Image (cartoon, rainbow, N blue to C red; front, side, top):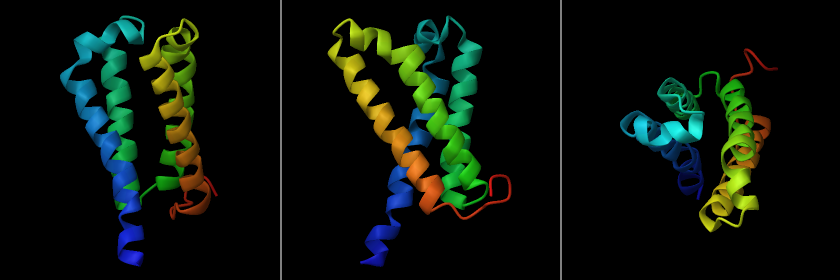
Length: 120
C-alpha cells in the first residue's frame, strides 16, 4: 500500500513540470494572459519547473510548495477569475483547478515536505 501512496508525490509534481514545458513551448500564445509579456510566461514556466523538481528531489520542497500555492492563487485572481465571472466555463474550471492545487500545495508543505531549511 505504501508503494502506491508514495506515487502521490510524483503524480502531484509531474503535471507541474509538463505545464512548465507548455509555457516554454507556447509562450507567444500565452503572452496575452500574462500582460502581453513572453518573458513573464517563461518566468512562470521556470517557477513551475523548479517547483516540480523540488517536490521530486525533496530539496527546498517546503518553500517550493508554499510559493507554488501562492503562485496558483495569483493565477486565479489575475488570469482566470475575470473570465469565470463572465461565465466562461473553461475559466471557471481553471479557477477550481488552481484553487484545488493551491490547497494541495499547502497541504504538502504542512504535512509532507521534508526540507525545513528556509521555512521552519
